[in-house]
Image (cartoon, rainbow, N blue to C red):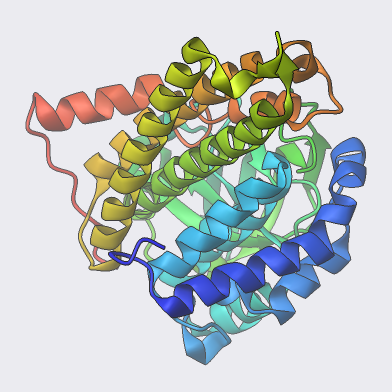
Amino acid sequence: MNALYFTEEHELFRKSFQDFLQKEVVPHIDKWEKSGTIERFIWKKFGEMGYFGLNQPEEYGGMNLDIFYTVIFLEELQKINSGGFAAAMWAHAYLAMTHVNKEGDDAIKKKYLTPSIEGDKIGCLCITEPFGGSDVAGMRSTAIKKGDKYILNGSKTFITNGVYSDYLVVAVKTDPDKGNKGMSIFIVDRETPGISASKLDKLGWRASDTAEIAFDDVEIPAENLMGEEGKGFSYIMQHFALERLIMGINAHARAEYALDYTLGYMGEREAFGRTIDKFQALRHSVADMASEVEMNKEFNYSIAKRLNDGQYVVKEASMSKLLSTKMADKVIYDCLQMLGGYGYMEDYPLARMFRDSRLGPIGGGTSEILREIIAKMVIDKKEYKPAAK
């Protein structure tokens, strides 16, 4: 236990969550990986256990716990070897629900946040567009106000939970002439006429549904606007810090899991009369990997602590995602090599880990975009500030 960040209560939560995952989730993972559909019952079980409300306000059914419960939630989800299942859970709890909690009014929170915490509603966050990628300010989707409604047109892509979710948190231009100053956030019911979704076939994250979504003259009630009109870009940027830290934490956790599994294999696999963990070349490779995992983990914990304390850590969170996802890809690549031919077999977990990990440097802001953001802050002294709300 790292006593600098985790208490005995944290560790009891970790053990109980590990037990829950082994009992309720792991027996179904291979089926969900093949089908690309996570059965609805598991969302309800997560809700009943309070796992979707760890960081949510008590008045809407949450527990308002410190960020290290979230860190444990993220880490243990990475250690059941399904990046897709993990993504579906945290995209609901920390992407869609974050916006509902931070920008939604009381009526929206009662209608969407409480059932999201309970596992009765599933949310998705729709930002990325087919022609925009990481260029959030360049989005083309619009919601033009007509009377007491907004008319939404456009498309989104690479949306986790984009097929099976019950509601969509959608970023659009309400005033296209103002660029990123004309962007707003809406919450939209899945059954609203004019919404269609197509499931995408991915290299990894096979268990989660990832969609391209089209909006064709979708009528949104004006009360479904979240926060202030024109502030959407600021809200997105504010929450990107959390998303990037989440992906950094995910990365160190899956790398740690890959290394632990590989060490177990090396202790049993024999070559030339001894187990392969006795060969110096492999031992030194493990030493390098273990050092990189630990360095990234400690950095990520420190950023989580600062975020929990109310600091605006957009630079550090960007660094977390940039370095941790790069490290995880390398560690998992090298771990797969340790298994030789078995590492290339789907019957062994490294093959799936290898595919799932590759999304790390892409999703939530590519490494190239993150480097430019960091460069602006370090070289150009640019300062990003949180939104007012």
